[in-house]
Amino acid sequence: MNLQPFLDEFIPKPYIIAGPCSAETAGQMLDAARGVAAAGASVLRAGAWKPRTKPGGFEGYGAEALPWIVDAASACGLLSCTEVATSSHVHKALDAGIDMLWIGARTTANPFAVQEIADTLAALNADVPVLVKNPVSPDIELWIGALERINAAGITKVAAVHRGFSTYGDTYYRNSPQWRVPIELHRRLPGLPLICDPSHIAGRAEIVDKVAQQALDLGFDGLMIEAHCHPAQAMSDARQQLTPAQLRDMLSALRLCRTKDSGSERLASLRAEIDNIDDRLLSLLAERMAVTDEVGRLKQREGMPVVQPERYNALMGLRSEEAAARGLDPAFVRSVLAAIHEESVRRQLDIVNR
Ligand code: PEP
Ligand code: MN
Image: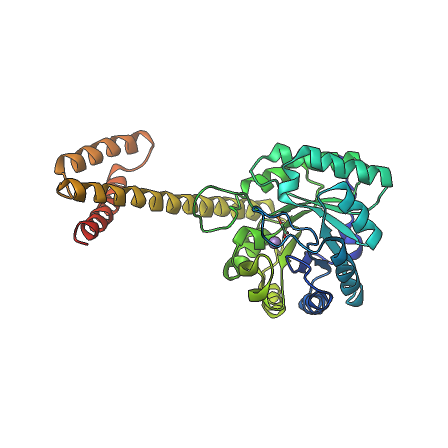
């Protein structure tokens, strides 16, 4: 890929892009722009067209919202950035004077849509920076493919935005970070600026700072953060938006990496992998307990006792053999399984005695 460094030219590092999920009114955008500029952001983000999972949600005010974003950004000395998903969005955003575009996760997942955007940019001979969010699934080839399509259209000012990946079932995160994917992207395209969107990973304001810190510890170049003056009233993604004051506090508390030393980057990457595995372990435990509860209800209907010693012994014997084969200490595995079993029995007793 032919990449040109571009953000360094006009904004300080780490690049801070912030603003509401959606542009709702001219006044809301101006208030948000003032707030995020005071908090330390350099680029104002806001969606004019909102891709919604289900019909009936707020889909954005479209082209009408573009001047709200552009005017608010320029009034506060910020660059403006919005999402485009079609050829017509690109025309309208550039006509309105938007400085930077981003391609959303649902669009990156669709090569036809990305190609349509790329063709439009090429036809316009545009020189606008384009941020490409990861596709909703952890498919690195699809992400790189989208970056390549945009780059092949003559856009050399390209950056990647990591916003996490959809997973089935309840997890701690809204979109699981699976840090090894952006780490691999960085290994394959070392010249590509990497920005993290901790808001869409976290899904709730309380843990945005934790995710942002992990991203900086991993050597990310910048952050895209959702901020709204009245998050509870936001028309989309209300739970995950920070107030400008929270954004300011978070940015001033973030530890910046002092060094690009690969030793510590590697350490941070391993720790992130451990956090990810622990997240999966917790999901698995929750899944196991749900099945346990179902077994409890069945035993109750069939009038069976909660504990069958033969079943417990068989389970322990089999698993300790497996533990040894996997290089785990059988005594450690027995104690973990005993604790899980004890909790299952407690839940089943609760069910039977309800
Ligand atoms: C957004 O940034 O508001 C958005 C819709 O993001 P994503 O494409 O990452 O879901
Ligand atoms: Mn959003």
